[in-house]
Image (cartoon, rainbow, N blue to C red; front, top):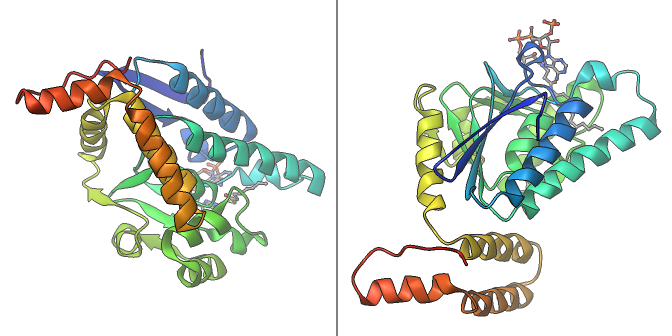
Length: 259
Ligand code: CO8
């Protein structure tokens, strides 16, 4: 499918998806969000893709939801807009392939929420993070009040959201928002390298690992370990399990076919 606001390259099992609205720092208007929903749905269905890297074109990852578009909205219109945003963020959790955020610059408001909806975040030394909505007289509306507190704890999330502070990448790493920092020049290559390592694993085990972690995260331990046990058993319905274990016994590298 053709998209107007995202760019897509696929190479060796890895999709590089770029939010591309650089004149407005890739801010998320409804058209960008609809393109992202379509792109993630297409990538989920594409068997040639095993892992996804999400980044932004130019100096921003995503500088938030589009303030100009939101300004005149009524509560009913903004609720609809928020619903589209939630649909995007929730759908990313349902994509059965790992999604790495490669945050190249500003990840503010809806941009930080988009990064947090990925499976993990790598960032360049130029990246900046924040939930500055409070400065606009609003609150995060694409899941930030929920995902940030789950990621870094309630009290730290409250400090960031109440102050609207924009923080640098070192602080974001210390808080546990960012997994790894790379130079701006190396970020995409390094994110693709990790994505290629992931792409060499079995598709079913990747999907089951992602869903077991995500579905188990918000439930009690007993329910979570039950989800894990059943997901683990499902691995044995698949050729990749035989291939992985046979390869170990035969002292060779596994060649997963994901059939
Ligand atoms: N929306 C619309 N346009 C934007 C946005 C945005 N979020 N961010 C930047 N732009 C535009 C600017 O207006 C400017 O346009 P123009 O050239 O036409 O004047 C262009 O991008 C370049 O921006 P700047 O000149 O401001 O660039 P600077 O390098 O000087 O500053 C900043 C960069 C610091 C990132 C600055 O642009 C900024 O503060 N942006 C806004 C950040 C922000 O507040 N984000 C949160 C938005 S609210 C939100 O995300 C809520 C999410 C939940 C929504 C739920 C919906 C229901």
